[in-house]
Amino acid sequence: MINQWVGIGNVTKDFEVKDIGETKLVNFRIAVNDRKDDDNTLFLNVTAFGKLAELSAQFLGRGSKVGIVGRLQIRKKEEKEYTEVVAEKIEFLTPKETDPYDFI
Image (cartoon, rainbow, N blue to C red; front, side):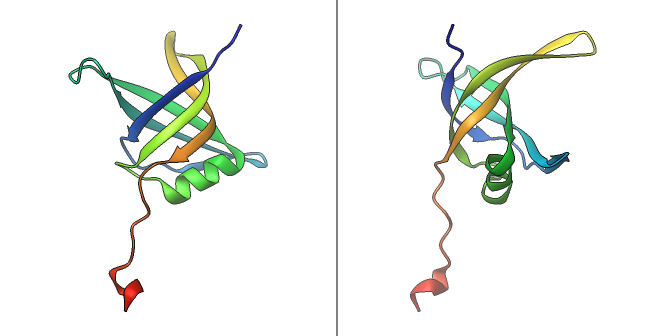
């Protein structure tokens, strides 16, 4: 069985890195628009670990466009189930802002 999710979305809020032992963890949410129906937006929780978590927290923020490859995972919390994407690769699609004084 293959469990792989690929999508492009926008980060909906800023996030923080958490330490879990020697590993870094980051959780954030993205909004993914349906190609066929613009009124149907899917909000997904994304989790990243290690260096990927550190780089995401450093370079991404609210409104950043990202491409994500990962696997789907279902978590249970207080008798509710949540679907999230555990990121294996995150592509930063929003261009880095340039300083207007770089060219002077």
